[in-house]
Length: 124
Image (cartoon, rainbow, N blue to C red):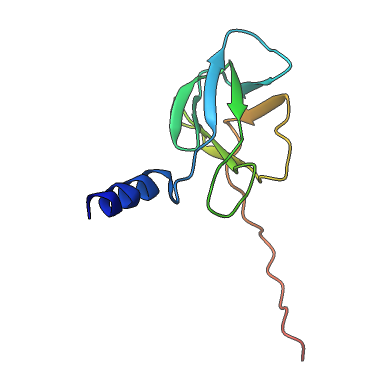
């Protein structure tokens, strides 16, 4: 019985856990890092819902993922949160199959724009 409990505990610890991408803020651009900029500077940056700092900043994102699906790389979501009134939040999504660029730019003055024209897509 004790042996069975230990096996179940070990499986629970190792089991279906997903290792999120590891994020490290670095002091300068390296061959493994990404520079995140915004206009105006000072936007709060979150990567996968984890606050990492304010722009401008350099980050290294280790995308290796150990999840139950067998995927080798994780998706990455970068949110830029405005610092002042009149600025707009922005999000950039990088699918697991897409390489993260060396430089990411957020223009905090751009607001979400909806199309003004409406089209009738019903075939008559």
